[in-house]
View 1 (cartoon, rainbow, N blue to C red):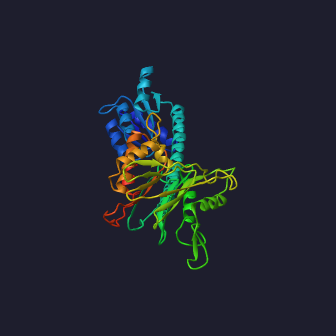
View 2 (cartoon, rainbow, N blue to C red):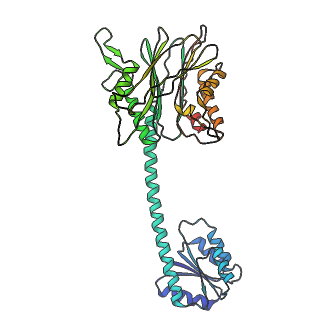
Length: 420
């Protein structure tokens, strides 16, 4: 070991240095605490052997100065003293010394203390090596997690449909880096817009993977991997899959897994742009809120089973039809909105959500949704967000409303990150 020996007595300094050198240690000496501290700050020492009573800076002050430094590795410190009182031993240990040896020094005593020092330092080096290994693993996991977050974010709407007389908005605020919620909104064909909110049980990687897997199947592009359109005879050459049929097909594709149960809830809707009627299928998900043009909010109640909760022969789903009148807003949400709890454990609830949407009826659609998320944070009163939050809204504009600008700002970006 590299050992620093500090003692103002030249004879004691030579004796201790010789004992250490005989055992193969490299020894550096100093005649007082101040000189010893200067050497310690210039070089790495595994152990320090210091006298207590010295001029300029005594041994205990040296110990305190060493312990105050941010060291990468541990330094074992032995204090030499002619004092034998119990209070002196406590003072040395409280200052940061590892051991106290009486003067005159006995070879066997010093050797035994240094063997303890070697064991402790070896353990410290093993711990540091393990920490470096864990840091490397954490770095690789962080890179993989960042990649997974990017994949999941890529499934959120990047461009809202531009439809005359309609406006759309959404907000997503996961409680973890990877969330179990996802949503989307897109134009299926020239006459239909499709939308959904999906909530996978649990949080983290496994939930996010299932959310991504399901989202891949809900693509508006007709392909072997999409479940929203199927081939049909001319002239259209395709047929839109209705919400209830989609729920049944998803149940067959994601059956009940007894050994590793995982399920998801969802609302999937198709809006007919000619009639402004939305057909919405529910699989265990809370029903939407319809905000009428007069500002009143109506919660649409649905009862159904999650996908993956029952097998395809027992699962029951529900379909509702909603016609958007001029000025109406239809808001879909995940249960993280209505189950947000305050400090007394009270849930935010559908009624408060409706009241919030009523108060914000005069705000632009995207501003209203952002305001709901802000209100949820106030409701929690600084408490943690324990579930993912998703909001998706459709609005039929009143006659004479100005057209949308077409500008799109990712609602899960910097604003959502700042809220978290």
